[in-house]
Amino acid sequence: MKTIIKNGRIITAGADFIADILISGEVIQAIGKDLDDTVDHLIDASGLLVFPGGIDPHVHLEMPFMGTFSSDTYESGTKAALYGGTTTVIDFILQKQGNSLRSAFDEWSGRATGNAVGDYSFHMAVTDYNDSTRPEIREMIEEGITSFKTFMAYKGALMIDDRQMIGLMDEVKQQGGMVTVHATNGDMIDYLVQKHRSEGKLSPLYHYLSQPEVTEAEASERFADMTNYTGCPGYIVHLTCEGALNAVRNATRRNQRVFVETCLQYLLLDASLYEQDFDGAKWVMSPPLREKKDQATLWAGLNQGLVQVVGTDHCPFTWEQKLMGRDDFSKIPNGHPAIEHRMELLYSEGVHAGKISLNKYVEVTSTNAAKIFGMFPKKGTIGIGSDADLVLFDPNEQHTLSVQSHHMNTNYSAYEGWQVTGKVKRVLLRGKEVIRDNECLVQKGYGRFIKRERVNGIV
Ligand code: URP
Ligand code: ZN
Ligand code: ZN
Image (cartoon, rainbow, N blue to C red; front, side, top):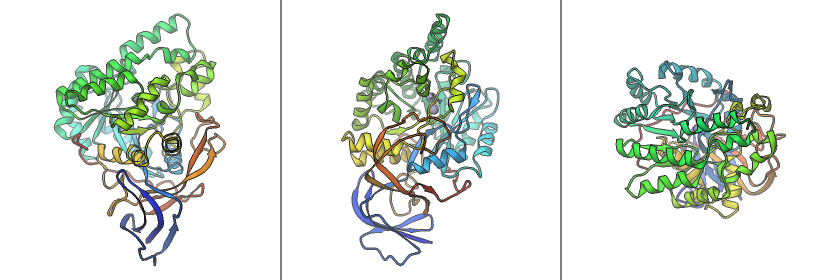
């Protein structure tokens, strides 16, 4: 099967030109002017931008969490991602404390295999690092899971201590992987949560007030210090604030590089949303939304190269699930739905609003994640031999986000009424057209597990 995309404006992390893309089977065969168009399928991309398929390296699908499961399945979550131009996601496997990494891997594979619509990979969250877990690090890397997630927070549930962290870093470094982190100080947060509860302060606002900036700045600095000491490649997920980014900035002064991901919501939304009674539960997530000054820091961080990736931390819950915390903010399932909106909202609020360039947009939505997590150049770029994962994007079309039109499995939108400039028109995944004019053309089972390469922290 041969497909040609004619006359699109091709944008990669380092280029911007009008040309044709010839696809043979699942991969790009040629890029050039006036390519021979005697093919099976011709797509006219005149007037459209062509991006590499988006990669969201931070999503939680069907994840058991806080007494429930995140509400998107592999089918609904990866399909919603495709509608929004994200062709590959990296989900988190959670090790159960006392159990093996292998058993968690089997459980997650069981949910994903045959159900995913878009491509996916896994990070392995190590919640219990001990002598029997150690040899499994190599095994997981051989399975193509090269990043190991740690939680410095969620005390009593997912959190590991610094002794486990340093041991894990030593092993992961030796085996050619990377340690990623939810960097907030779990003990401080636990203290503040209990303090607010005992004072009868139970509304969503107190979720925010229980996780002040210092909890994230302190943990980010500690993580940077530990990765510096061990030499293990490190990546901070969902970084939100000035204090935490300054910890990373300081690390660069000793010639260290710590990779940083922020998420859409921390660039666009702020903590004033918690002031509105229980409705604020829609944005109860960890870390919480921050201040306007933090948004300015993050946008600057993208342009300074200190923040390399924009993910979503898509962890959706229905309104009924959010109501589990009606009388106590600490019981509100943490997370919000966003997997579908990342590419369009970041284009609109970033490129269209003049805050980032088109090339930077591609870097932070696709290329850097592919490089950092061992998928480049198969994913993350438009090049000869790369998977034909492509987004055809109308930079001028205006539309409004709403629960009425999104495809995520939640009965509210965290971005209800947002006016967006720029729309995903067509999406190809491994050479096949999967989205055309708001219609999904593939079924569950089309999505494939992407085995990732070893990483060394140099991109
Ligand atoms: O609130 C969040 N972020 N929920 C998902 C779990 C995590 O910490 O990433
Ligand atoms: Zn987290
Ligand atoms: Zn997360």
